[in-house]
Amino acid sequence: MTLMEQEAREAPACIQQQFTENATRWQAVLSKLANHPVTHAMTIARGSSDHAAMFAKYLFEVQLGLVTSSAAPSVVSVYHADLSLRQTLVVGLSQSGQSPDIVAMMQQARAAGAVTVALVNQEDSPLAEAAEFVIPLYAGKERAVAATKSYVCTLAALAQFVSLYQQDTALEQALTQLPTALHAATMCDWSVAHKIFLPSQDAFMVGRGYGFAIALEAALKGKETAGIHAEAFSSAEVLHGPFALVKKDFPVMVFAQPDATWQGTLSLTQRMQDMGVKVVLAAPADQVVPEALHAILVPLPNSVHPMLDPLVQVQAFYIWMAQLSVARGFNPDQPVNLNKVTETQ
Image (cartoon, rainbow, N blue to C red; front, top):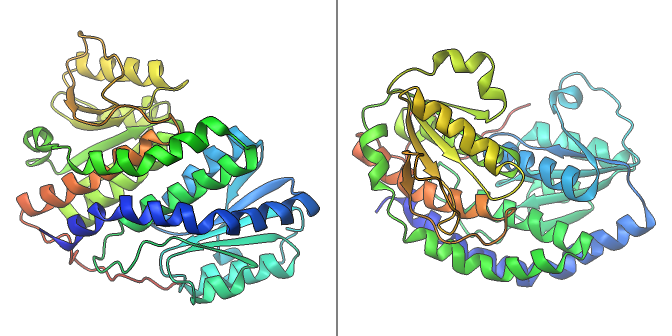
């Protein structure tokens, strides 16, 4: 078993610990926000962490009403801009917390009076030191170059924050069930999708809303671990220019969660099926998929909560991608041209 697969399988236990350890840390953030109201939010991240930031954008905007932007760290680290961020919740997301540009942006945000929070796996990292509040991911040591458990832990931490901020009892209850659902996902066998993706050089990964962050991450993992030129699109955006590439036998993986995006995502899936596209659909087991939709369904547990189902999907995806990578002749633990920690100015 590759390190990538081993580490992905560790995520459920890591998240169980995280929920216990971080509740008081998040309460400290909430106390600060009660005395220092914010009008919008900004995330600072790169790579897989930036995909987690996309999840934060949907959570913060849909659930908290906070318009959320993704920082371009070079605005500060290269152009030395002075941003007005006093009424901003600034969240830095990083597994290592090492990259100088991410740290520089966080330092400037804190100096500008923002409420600054670092979600990091290394509590003694420069990013953690730069922020006022630190939320450890508790993912443990991650040796594989491709991030897996740290990504799922980041999404879980963001969901816990929103549940506490909103005092959302339904989401809080669902979070208690999440580790069990994630463990069940590690037992799901997605090898049925091998026949579509083994020979593929190109693919689309499609999601919408909370699931778009998963599509982004899936596309990155396809590139870095399996040599597949995968691109991620919202199920709405793919209907524009990218749809010109969608032809018979083109491989597409669709992530769907049972919320306001469900019907639109299924309609797109049906349209692609009618065109002869090879569609793999990842959806909770208890959701009704029309019989006329002949997409390949990969197994997943029942829905936990529409906001949390994408975490369960990416948990199963990581294990499948590690196996697909090996089947395609790659080593997912040593991707070509990549290092575990990438530092940019």
